[in-house]
Every structure is written in C-alpha cells, then in structure tokens.
Length: 481
Ligand code: HAM
Image (cartoon, rainbow, N blue to C red; front, top):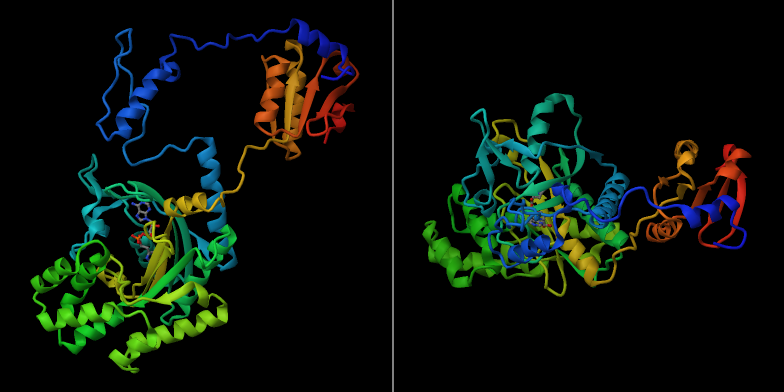
C-alpha cells in the first residue's frame, strides 16, 4: 500500500489476524478429507478401474470424490466455459428467430423404444421408478420435442421454430468427444415441408461456427438425403418396411468394413444386386453424378439441388458438400440429412440432423413435417482448444469490499449491499489479512478495492483503490457508484 494509506489501514496491517485458523478442521469430514485420497481415486478412475472407497487412517470410510464414469463435474472455470458456449447457442437461436423450450431429463421409456436396431436404443439409461413406471434419462431431445408438439395440438401456429439446450445420457463406449452425458443444443422446425427449413438450420450452424472463429477450411458439413437410398431401393423393388433397417446398417459404413455391411444388408433379405447398387450410390460425392445415376425427376435430386442453390444465396455454399454416404444412425429421418465434421478428420461428428416427417405418427398422432439438428458441447470444445480459439474466461468481479475492523462489518454490509443494488458485482471479504485481500483481488480480476476503515467511516467516507492504476482516493459512502 502507498504512503497515503490511512491510519486505520496501518493499524489493520499491524494488528489484525484472521479470526479463523487457515488449516482445515480435521473433524469436518465432508469437505476436508486429505488430498492424497482424492489423488488415489483419480488414478483409479483414470485407469478405468472400478473406484473403491479408500480407508483413511482413522478407519472411517470416505466417499469417492469422482463423478460416475463418463460424466463431468463443472467447477467454476468449466462452468464459465459452458455458460459462454451456451450463450453462443442462444445468440444464434435468437437471431434465427427461434423460441427456447425445455423438457425433463427423465422421460418415459416408451418414447425411446424403436425397433430398427439403432445404437442409441441400446445405450439407454433406463430403469423402473418407485411407482413401477419404466423411465429413461433421455439420450436425445427430439422425441420430447415431438411429444410437446403433439400435446400442444392445434393451439400452436405452424411453422414452429424451437430451440433447447439440455443434458442427454447415453451409455457409450467413451472416445474423444464422446461421453456418457453431454449437453446438446437442438434447433427444430415443425410445419415447414420444403427445404427452406433445412437451409435455415444450416445457416444457424454456420453462424455458430463463424461466431466461434471457425472457418470453412476447419469444418465442413456433409449433406445428403435418405431419399437417395429410397430411390435405389425403389429401383430394385425392395419392400418399404426394409428402408429404416437398411439406413441404420448403412450408417455404420465408417465403423464396419464394407464386407461386414454387405453381410448385414444381405441378412435383411436384400438381393446381392441391390446391395451392390446401394454401396455404389453411397460412394457418390457429386450432385451431377447423382443426377446421372438416379435421373433428374427423383425427389432427392430436386431437394438437394434446391438446397445447394439456397446455400449460394445465404452465402454458406463453401461450408457444405454433397456426400451420399451420410445417412445418419437414427431411425426417424426421412429426407435431407447432414453432419458437420472437422476437415482434418480427427474428431467425431460435431453436430448432425435432418428431416423427420413421420415421427409423430409413430406416437399415434397426425404427422407434421419436421426437421432439426443436435449440436453437442464436447467435440466443439475439443476443436476450439486445438485451434486456440477458447476465449479468456477468467473470473471478473467489479469490487471487493473489505472492513478493516471487526466493528466495521455492519457498515461494510451496507456498502456492499448498495453497490449490488446499483448492479455492480461486489465480493464482501472479512477475516483476512490485507495481503490476502490484494492477492484475492488479483485472482478474481477485481477492478476496485473498497476499504471500510474506522476514521473514514466516522466521516461518512470509504477509501477506494483502483487496482489497475493503483490510484487511491476517498469517496462519500452514499455517493459510491
Ligand atoms: P445425434 O447425431 O445422435 O443426433 O447427436 C447429435 C450431436 O450430439 C452429435 O453430433 C454430437 O455433437 C452430440 N453427441 C451425441 N452423442 C454424444 C456423446 N455420447 N457424447 C458427446 N456428444 C454427443 C441426435 O441426437 C438427434 N436427436 C439430433 C436431431 C435433432 N435431429 C433432429 N433434431
């Protein structure tokens, strides 16, 4: 502190001691058990071992401090990152004129039971609740959206544009960017049958990437339509009921070998010629080539051509490419499907979505054309880290209010309270040495230190220190802004 420090401040520096000891109270088990136990748990979990309670030296058992495998805690710095990312999701949704909605994480199991053999239905966190009802921690949000649209019935005016950000649970094998819980930003449009809906959703995704500083040389969006596969199946007169099953199998193309896929397709009853036809079409990466193979009067071709021409108008054509191998692994898609990927090919899909015009009828309701995407919080953060695009999200507080004497704790409350009412963030600190307060101010990037000292307070004043310039002055407490 400069030579201008007040008398009460000097007194404080010389005589004040913290009222509470700094070392943890050894009898307070919940938050103060020794750190070495935390480390033991961490290494057990990192190795994939089932964590077991550690016996501390006094014989009492201690709870595992790690969250369940594949799930995350959000300590303050992680929480700041999450909030920042969600703010970006919300801002894009706002400029796209979407309304926010929300749903319970716990849903009834029936909403997620589908018979097409999708991976997602084998990864359910499902159980019976205490009332004997079958429930799940939702693995995705689309069925909940459909449920709410059905519930609202005729009262909603179409088209309806909704977005939501929520936690999803999948019992996954964990890889980079894939975990057992993740947050998903979803944007969905109900009641827009034309590819205008898809083109709007693609713009939202591109706007998000651009806000984050990601360019089309980092990321691309592969686009196709399930109607491509439908057209091939029609060419070989394959019965309608095999369509979904074929889509789910074909989606495994990157994960299984071509031979394994062929075997699975044959086992559904498809003739070898149709299997070859499917595999050949799926390798197409050019729209004119697709048109050559399927003909121009096929719906898939018309939809895709329209979408790519819209993309030029919106100004995001550089971000998207046609790739017939994109089919997506969820059963309900019926038309255009898309997935964003990193061009280096190191990460899992960044986001994915498509048209699902027939989902509502699987819940016994009248169909409404629908289309949307899900965008996870994990892969995008990996990419931002890799590109050095994560913003500086250190903590920032406006003011620290610090009474220099115990008897000034009351006045300090009044000062902090008045600052907060004016909208400033104020951290009220007590029972610390001034040295600690300065360090703390640095840690939390405080702008000002408001010292409440005896001699100043008697004159209705407080001492203000601007921490960036070290400037220091007295101000009337009632006029503190
Ligand atoms: P999905 O492709 O299963 O689609 O998931 C969408 C996105 O969620 C993925 O691209 C990824 O970003 C993220 N994601 C999925 N699983 C995980 C995981 N285990 N760990 C981390 N992130 C994950 C759907 O869920 C569709 N319901 C999307 C949709 C909305 N389609 C239409 N509307």
